Image 1: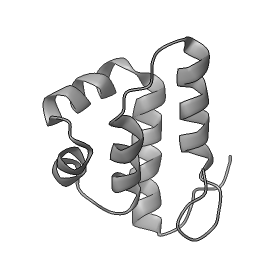
Image 2: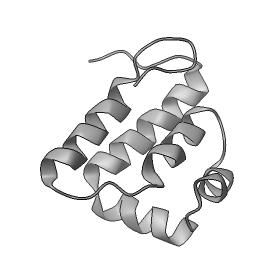
Image 3: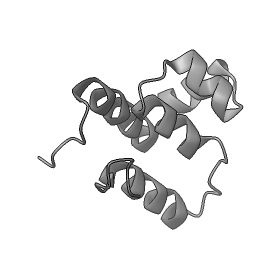
Length: 87
């Protein structure tokens, strides 16, 4: 996925690939939710814009490690103002 400034946002791409490989149908709200977080929106606003409840999002975060990691990295990226570098 290419971010607003033209850089590749690997975490989201990796997350999407893992969902596809797992055979789980991608939820239509996940990618928009993560993009809104990356753009600096709070969880409540990101949920509203993605059309999902906060309860469903936090439930997903608790049970899905890849989603939790993508969420954490989206928040970190929004605070840093740039994509995280691979470790």
